[in-house]
Length: 298
Image (cartoon, rainbow, N blue to C red; front, side, top):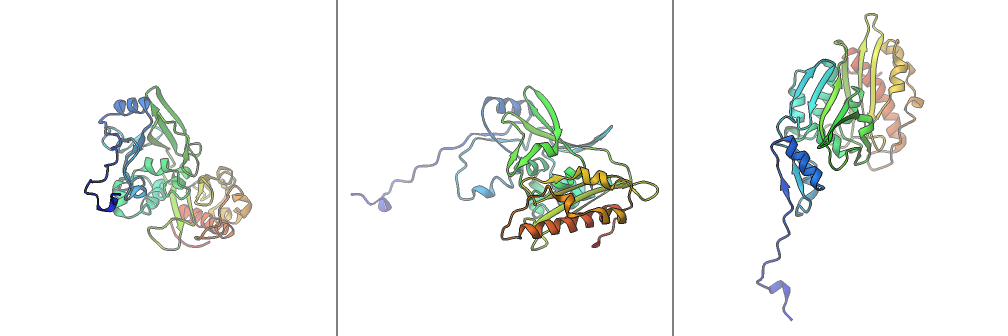
């Protein structure tokens, strides 16, 4: 019997997966309408998960689709194109309400990842610890999904459904993130707790956006918590409860019962009880930071 280890025949090459890289949105949507494709943008999550393995799924690379990148403002709000990178978020001249999103952008891996990774990719991966989700939830962001038959919008809270689950159908692309205008004086904050400062999966993360009135009371507020449930949660009832109070009063009003929707897990990074306690502390701190512009524990 021939010893396979001594055979001179080369091993069979794996079959090549289909790879499409359209230059316009119409072609991209037509491809999705024809067949099931894995959408690829920056590839910062896709490729690391396949190191040493052949690419065995058909790919739709949207990185060169015209019109999907960039940040613009029109009446009523901001439009962040799907293939806008985290580096572009960091460098964009956005109002202070986006300070939390900029802070989160600086936490998305190292600079190489920030240069390639896209905002839409971070949302579509739907990791419970995705840095971009809490600040966009706190800002009240909506998602634009487009297919060959048209476009639809839905709140980000209804788009990310759970761990690696979204409301996107197989024939749709996430084409933009839409953020409503906030008052000029609004400011955002983002806080992340992990075992080290950089390149870490969060134990808990919180984002807050706060606008104060002329009397120094909260006129509008957004609060979201990530890494403590299967999907980040926007705490709209808590935010409404704090309206009309000074930041100091608001901090005293926030209790563990306000975060009852959280469902953290026990893992090597922390226990469920620790995560809830950490989230409560971070919510209070983020609220103060967004309201005053100063960091510091309450």
